[in-house]
Amino acid sequence: GATPPPAAAPDAGARTFHEDRVAEARKLHPRAFERWSDDEDERLRGLITDGRTLDEIIGILERQPNAVRIRAERLGLTSQLDEGSQSA
Image (cartoon, rainbow, N blue to C red; front, top):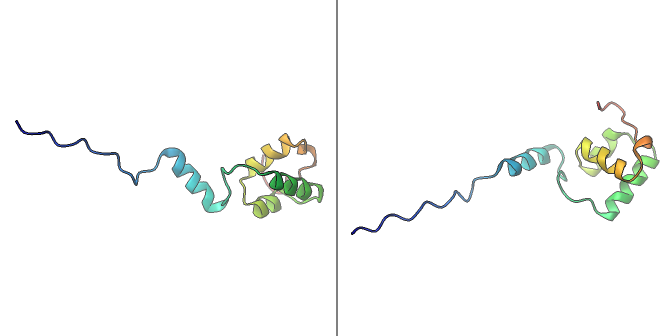
């Protein structure tokens, strides 16, 4: 009898929905979805304490607005975060 052809391997070049989302987010925010380091937490704390706006912070840290908001909340700095022109 003839041997059946091997099963087709999944396309190694195909990306998952999550990988597509990450790639798209990183076009605007290169550090999107990366873990926050202790140094970056301190930098965020300093930027907020210095009165930098959310727009300035997302540009400096290359993070998404909600990532900065959530991290500020975890650091207890939400009340000091200047939302500037960003919408909630």
